[in-house]
Each structure stands twice: as structure tokens, then as C-alpha cells.
Length: 111
Image (cartoon, rainbow, N blue to C red; front, side, top):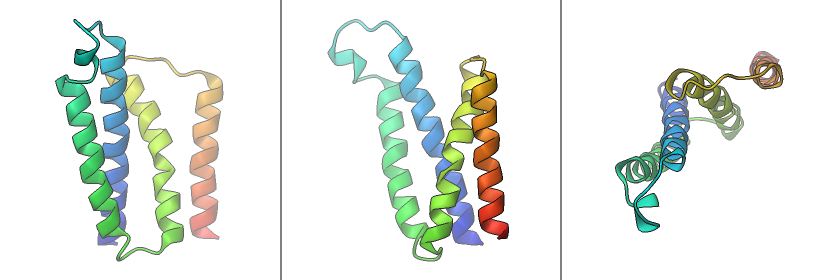
């Protein structure tokens, strides 16, 4: 259970790093180099690097089939974080898609 929790938290932070990258992409930068050398991009890649090691560690105690299922929650987290942090609206198709993901995870883990 501990390792699954690490995977779940790492999935959340992976989604958060994607939000940071999108925030950086939406901003105007002074020059080409500052598109990549700003705190959002650096922090996003640092988080991705830490998530890589967290996932590697967590997979020592979690069966691979469950890790892949937990990783699909990235899509759900990205949608929720986009709504709350970026103030983006999601459409019916995105909502249905995320509900299908959640339903698939439930069917896979309970079946």
C-alpha cells in the first residue's frame, strides 16, 4: 500500500509539472533562451526528475500492472489542475473521457 501511495503522489506531481510547463508556454519571454531558463520550466523538469526516481523506487514494491493503472490518473489530475490553476474550462468530451478512465481503472482493479 505504501508503494502504491508513492506512485499515486508521483502521478499528481507529474501532472503538476505539466501544468507548470503550460504556464510557462503561455507567457511572453524576453528571448528564446528564457523560454527554457525560467523558474517554471526548471521546477517542472526537476519535479519530473524526482518523479522518475520515485516511480523507480515504488515499482520495487508494486506489481507492474497496477503501476500502469495508477499512471492513467495523470489525465484526471491534469484536467483538474487545469481547471483550478489555469482557470480552463473543460468540455463534455473531456469530462466523458476522464470518466471513462476512472471507470476503466475501477473495472480493472475490482475485476
